[in-house]
Every structure is written in structure tokens, then in C-alpha cells.
Length: 338
Image (cartoon, rainbow, N blue to C red):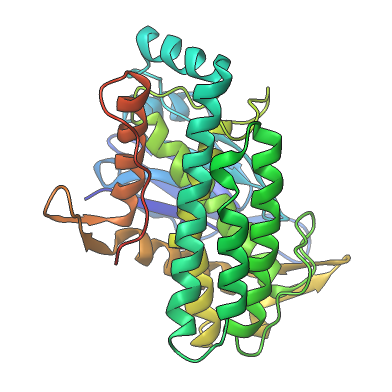
């Protein structure tokens, strides 16, 4: 099985025959660069890279990565996702592009898909809260409040109205974090920049979820720039934002609850400076490993009647959406049943 590799340190990535060589680079006390111990990565083992430090590579290297269907996702110093290098869109089809465009331009069809995304996201949020409610966290009132807002979703007539309801639901959902988490508090949701530890984990985790969804979309015939819930923009793959709504509660939120309640991530794993709170390198490694463990975890799929990983669930979601757009089968978004 191919793996995702995470590059935390600045370095040089280059091709050596059918192997990739990553050499970390650091500066000594005089500001001179010093090469670290190189790491050799067999290309057949790699699905994608996540780059969190500065990376030196030439066009020949990226040509090679493109040929081998290896994606590269880039993050800046402040943990913001800045972009991706994606292999050639060999699966894109004109038929799918026309279908996506047609559904987007049809107000009734667009709102129907957008509602499905939010209904699934809310269902998965409630499942998370019900799990902890059964374990004595007493979030019953918040669950009822969310269900009350969710009952309005089928009657929405515009995406803006739907997004407004989603905002109210998520506000209440995040209030429950204060009851579920032990030593850490959620406070007000802050994004750019995050102001406390929980917000830092949510922001960073959601960006990872976005790239996972983007990669899954890229492996289907869907066009990542044409979306239904989020407005398509010039500088982002907005369909990945749509799909991520379903999986943020299933993957990211569950991991956050785990790493904080089990004290795998503690206050020492954050840096607080310049009016922001960010994971330090040790914290990033722990959090990313927990997310990767969740993505490789398997569940018994009800329809396929076999075990599939959480990462594969994202890809299956894209296939289901594709069938809906091509009028093959109605789209039924993933709602946690386990």
C-alpha cells in the first residue's frame, strides 16, 4: 500500500534513478547551511507528500512526480495550506464537466446536493455528541438544539440560507467541545489566526481533511473547481470544501477528542506568539500521525460488505457524487452508522 510522507524540515528533494532522496538542510551558528542525513524513498511506496518546511526541487523532479501520480501539498510557516502540485488530470471527462456545470447552474438541483452535504455533516456531528453523551458528558441540550436547527434544512431555498443554518449548528456543536474536552477549552471559534489550542487543532486538521478530499476528487472524473455548497472561486478547489464537510466530524473531530482527552497532545506541544497559537513540530508529528492512523483505520462497509479504510470512504463518496451527476444513481451521503 502506498503511503503519505510528511516533510517537516527544510530540505532538498531530488530524483535518484527510481528513488527519491530527501536531504534535510539546517543553518549553523554562522548562517551557513549544513546538510543532514539523507533519506531515500522508493517511489513506488509514495502516494503524496505534505511539505511543512521550505523545499528545494527542480522542474525535472516535478515532472517525475507527475509521471508517478504523486501529489505534493504545501503549507506555510503558520500552518496555512498554500497549494498543491497535482499530477495530470488524466481522468477528467467532458461529460462530467458538463454534468457538474449543469447541476450547479440549476438552482433546484444545486440546493438539493448542498442540503445533502449539510444533512450528512450534521448527522455525523450529532453522532459524535451522542457518543460522549452516553459517557456522561451531558450534551443532550446541545444535541436537541442542533436537531431543531437541522429540521429547517429541507425547507431552505438558497445556499446562503443553508449556510446560515449550518453556521448556527456549528456554533452549538463547538460549544459542546468545552464539555467533551478535559483540560482544554474551545472558546470562540477563531481561524486566521487560531487563538488557542483547540482552535489550532481544528484549523490545522480541517486543512488536512481538505487535501485528503482534494486528492480523492483528483482520482475520479470530478472537476474540483465546480462545487455546490461553497461558491466556486478562482483560487481554490471548492468541491473539496463541500466533501470535507462530511468528513471533518468523522475524521478530524474524533482525532482531536482522542489526542486531547488521552493527553497525547499537551500544552507543551503548542507555541503561543504573535497573537496566535500554533502546533510546534513535535505537536504536528503527533497530530498528523493520529490523523494518518484514523485514515488507515477500517470499518465494515454496509453496501460493499467488506472492510474499507476511512481514506477510501472519501474516494467512495466522490464516486457516489459522480453517479448522481451522471443520473446513474441518487447521491446518498455518508452518515455514520458505526
